[in-house]
Length: 562
Image (cartoon, helix red, strand yellow):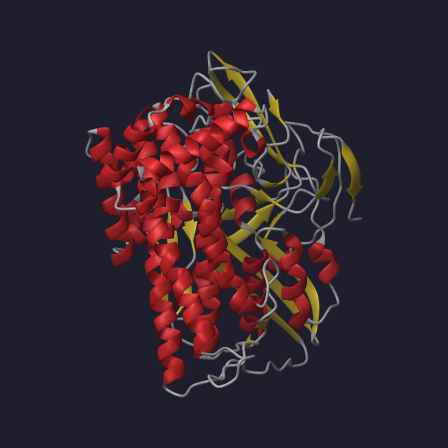
């Protein structure tokens, strides 16, 4: 069975599965578009790379900008001022909050929530249920009645709009009508709160997507409390007000919804684990060198939390020396497995061959092993290391979900499809606290009279190698650069969806998408909802292709990058 394309993601992903006896027996993950920006970067000024790498994707622009400047700074052994770290951290936090809210409500919740069934709900009962779970003021009976009326208006006109083309009435949809109505209510409210988070990115980054304020060596945000055009107290408090609003939504709505919906689908806890090797990198730097962080990084192999090993700095040798990519089953020239600094990007397309080459995505490996990246990886690494904030919210989420499900849940249940959703909601909640903290760190540092934002880079003659990492919303992102006499000689990006969506390697080891699908139930092969549930739980992002379609779905034009 071929699902092509997987919808409600960024980019073009094809999934093939073999189904026997109502369950997936084998699977293949294929990225269907070529990304050639690494080749475009050759010979360019390293200070310009972040502007190009933002165009890897239409969604993840900020994260590639961050990883790129860090890679060049690493090659030059260049520190950045404290204000620059804090401003970058606020961008990372706001972008992450925006991204996680959008992923759950607008990209994946409709795999679990039957919108049409919400029309059967009693608004009073839905309101009572919502008010029993959370103090959120947007769960009133009047609110539920208004949402149900709006939904009925859509259906009566035969125009489901944003809710068209869902698998409504599918046998795998199990939520009671009142829970469906509550979820639709929050789906609509989430549109406003993801926008608030993105406003923070726009204020600090100059615009979004594609922020304009970064520079190799710092940021371009001039700080002057007496100047209306600079970063001043008015703008800082506008940022804080927005972050306060988003934090309330995340803590009182998003996390609660994921706990409740997950508990009502508890029979899915056994599906979707796949690769249980995890990789996360530390982020939210607290010093100018990048040796102290507010988010932890490290590795876990074979699901063994007791054996977690930390990644501790922007110079970390354990990370630097153990990343490779394989092209044994990818549409590139050769069959090598190399460190990013030794890679090339030479496309060589052939037909889809499940036993040969079948994807534009390379297959990253850490110490020769496939690794799962994403919020689940970081929450497990943090939990294993005793990270106070992560442990607090993971235990809260497991306790809340367990109370609804009537069972005691431990971190072991997180290995799987539902665990990835819960970990992402927990990460957003951790972000909601850290965003306020880092706003305070920036405001206090400015209050001390420090307005420095930039250290100018100097490029020595000869060759330098650098790597920069960032724990992006979809997981570990790293950029690798080789600079020769001030120009880019080689550039490679090993992105989160490459780690998760990669094909088999030369040893036949499946990537996380492929491994996670094996064993998944398939109730209706003509409507493979269960495949979408597991793939969407990773938050796929396979940039970058552009297609234009009319309202009938007909392709009008195609842009090819050669």
